[in-house]
Image 1 (cartoon, rainbow, N blue to C red):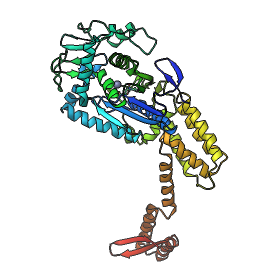
Image 2 (image 1 turned 90 degrees about the horizontal axis):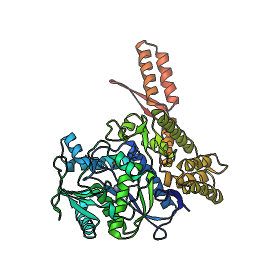
Image 3 (image 1 turned 30 degrees about the vertical axis):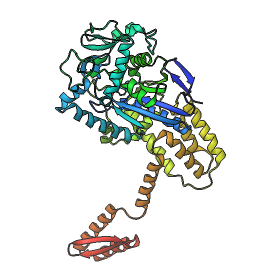
Image 4 (image 1 turned 135 degrees about the vertical axis):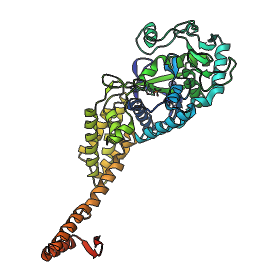
Length: 472
Ligand code: AMP
Ligand code: ZN
């Protein structure tokens, strides 16, 4: 049974779903105004492993992800500039062009890291009717109010405004808004925007009609509505990076439970940050690393995946090139060891069961991926047939998704190709030596080279244009 840390209870809990065997899973998707950085992708890798663990254990999983293409302001607390508008201005494109470009780029990187494409992907701009319906109900039931042109959620109407961590709510709010002036329309400091019609910054590009005037939705409402549309009133698991916990997830809980009138999501999974140069990697900070950049530098994206799996999702992960080099070297070595397995012998089901149990126990212990990777190394060291090892590797890789067998097959193919005969470069070098010998009228040496190549299965063909060769 999976024991997973729940940010709601601050404890590892036995994981239970609303309907036995079925798991509804929601993931906060990217804000598509820029490339995803490898910090964002750390969160998606760990969520992918979690999803695949549940699938491996037999759950029928449905995973939904939103794409934020409207309404996310540069401060998560509803102030600043719309991130999409910022992206459009930077690139002199329309918001829709920017959204399309970066959504495609996101899923290209997501795929390179072997993450499974979610069952449902919903752009926020496709759900305007649902937001209006939800906000209307919140207005009708007194949970929302209209002020200064915007609709706000009234947090004072809740019995408890939930925050995930141990900080004082006041601290968090002040902390989140250090550099921005307070929104005087708000009745309470934690109130948040459900629908914007007016804002302090210049005009928003995308606007829709609503009962409160032409405008656009706040960021938080999209995740509540998208989740409820596809996964119903009871959500089993909600994921995101730790920076989403407050205010985004806190506000999702507030509005969803006010709307539904009952508890909504039972389990909250937060991945801690990837840090670089001593701070959280972030898009707004300017410099950030992308999957393409790693590839340009010669890294296999799956080496980055292994780097992430080697540490626990609830610990900050410090990025350095040296640490990535170590992971890349470990990945190459791992693949070579797997490529050396022949597949001989019978699959021993007892051994398979033992190691599967070890692997599952690691993952069931709050997704201890590094111990799951250790289980893989233990299989390689095990006193078992190669066939048994390969069966286990294939099974583990359904979760780890390091393309272990695919990469090992590629290594084997390469080895076979180079073992199959002389390397073309060497042949060309010998042909050049022979041409020189002929030019020096050293016919004996020229014949010796021809014979040497013949012995290696290479026949030389002299033409007017020079000498070519073929394998015989
Ligand atoms: P965004 O595109 O900014 O909305 O973020 C997409 C996801 O990446 C969210 O779940 C964030 O919580 C997460 N995230 C942002 N920065 C980091 C980081 N440095 N390390 C890990 N996850 C992050
Ligand atoms: Zn969200």
